[in-house]
Length: 169
Image (cartoon, rainbow, N blue to C red; front, side, top):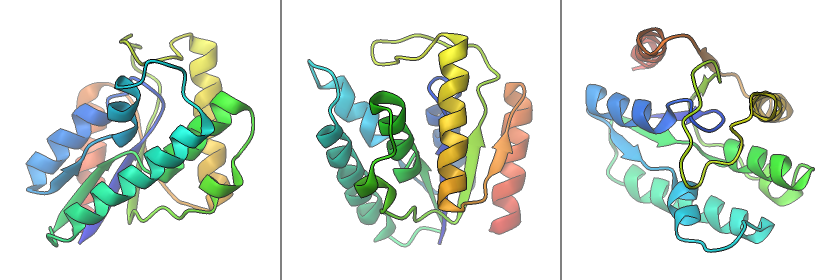
């Protein structure tokens, strides 16, 4: 089984691409647990919420992996949860940073597409978006994780992602 995780700041197409990739390759999609969790809140996120998000995502991923699919596509994982806490609270959390990413392949979607606001997205300002992207890059570096950079217009993004996954299947 190949586990592919899509990472990146808000509004870079992770959810749309993850669903398309899972369908294209006949894999199983793990939805972004953090988004579902956040949409149900009526308050600001806390650090403890991020612990719950990490745990909830891992449980969903474990359940999907138990079916032994050829491909498991995760719309974010612990890398992004950890980056979110750094962005929101100003420092890298030791508990979250100690949890391993279980992805075999990381696709990092760059913030070079227009931001689309919605009720849970927070960082649409271009400077904040780039600061968040820098935090994500730092998180990958801190974990020593390689990634495939996915950038450009939508068709170019799709081609990069399909090629990266196809090479590993």
